[in-house]
Amino acid sequence: MRFADAIVVAAGTSSRMGGDDKLAAPVAGRPLLAHALGAIAAAPEIRSIVLVTAADRVADLASADWLPSSVVAVVAGGSRRQESVERGFAALNRQDADGETAGAAAQARVVLIHDGARPLVSTELVSAIARAAREHGAAIPIVPVGDTIKRIDPAGTVTNAGDRDELAAAQTPQGVRADVLRAAYEAFPPDGPPTFTDEAALLEACRIAVHAIPGDERNFKVTLPADLSRVRVALGDESARLGAASGTAGTCAPRVGYGTDSHPFGPGTGLALGGLVVDRAPRLSGHSDGDVVLHAVADALLGAAGLGDLGRMFPAGPETPRGIAGVDLVGAVARRVAAGGLVVTSLDCTIVAGRPRLAARLPAMGERIAEILGVPPETVNVKASTGNLDGMEGAGRGISAHVVVVLARGSAADA
Image (tube, rainbow, N blue to C red):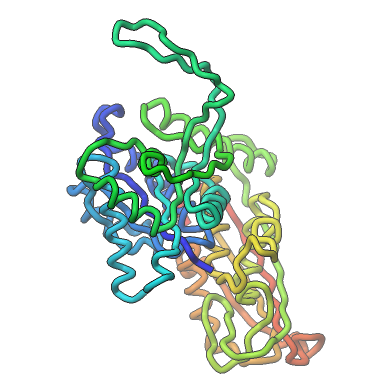
C-alpha cells in the first residue's frame, strides 16, 4: 500500500558551491538531484512526490525528461526552508483536494521531507522512515557524532562540551503524519518566527515526540565542492566494484545476466504481463502483480550487475507490499544498475504460455520494457512459445518467462 508522499526540497542558492547549481551537477550521467528523486520514487510506500525549487528553475525542472513519473508537481520555494516545505505540503494537499485521497486517509498519510542535496539516500532508508513515521507519528534518521561537540561563546571561549553519547546528527528524509505536520504549522506559521533548521526542530517546539532510527553514513548532504567529489567517488566505487567483478579495471566488458520466473494462474482476470494488462485473461497468482516478464527482466539485470537477486531486494513478505507492480520492481532495479554506470545494450525475452494468444501484443511489450528501462525500443526483443504444449505452461495452467540481458559501461545516451 502506498501510504506516503514526499516533498523534495531543492530551493537553495548553492552559495557555498560558488553559486553553481549543485543539484544540476552531472553525476554518473544524471543530474545530482535525479539520484535523490530516483531513490525516493523507488520506495514502494511512496505515492507521489512534490519537488520544491527556486522560482527561476520551476519551468526547466517541470519539463525535465529524467523526472520520475511519481513527481506530480514542481513548485517555487520560499526564502526559508520551512516556507519551502510548507509550499510543498500545500501542493500535496491540492492533489488530495482533487480527489486522489480524501478524509481520514488524507489525514493519516505520511509525508517525507528530503533534501535534494542528499543524492546517496537509499530506498531502504526511505521505506524505513515512512514505516516509522506511520507507527510513531514522526521519525528521523540519525547517525552518531564522531567528533566531540563544543559550545563556544561570542568571544571564542569554550563554555560547554556535551556528552557525545547523547548527541547525534540528523539526516533526511524526515517523516511525519500529515495531521501532525498540519497541527505544527498552525502553531508556528512557516512565514513567522522562529526559523527552524529542519522539521524535527519544528515538531520539538510543538512538544511532539520524534522517533529516531539509524541513518546511513553515505547519506550526507552536498554543501561544498569537496562533497560533490565524495558523491562521485561513492558512485565511482560502485562502478569500480562492478568492473572488478567482471575482471576489468577502468573499462567494463559486456556483462550477461539471465533471469527466469513462472507463476500459475489464479482467480480473477486482468493479466499483468510485460508491463501491459490483458483485461480478459486470467491473472497470475503471487505476492506481487505476478508479471513474470518484468520479474525475469529484474532478475536478469541484477544478475548481470552482480547485485544478487529479486527475492533479496524485494522479499515476498510484509516488507514488500502485496500486489506491488512489476513496473515498480524493474524501475528500482534499473536505478541500482544505472548507479553503477551500467546500461542495457541488449535484452531478449521468451514467454512460454499455452494461453492467452500473445503474438499481437509482443511488440507493445517490447516497447513498454524499453520505456521502463529508458533504452531505445530496438534494444529489446520479446518473443513467445507454447513450449510444445508441455508442462504447466503448455497445459494452460500458468506462464513462465526467460530473459537474457547484456550490460555495458556507459550512459543512457550511449545505449
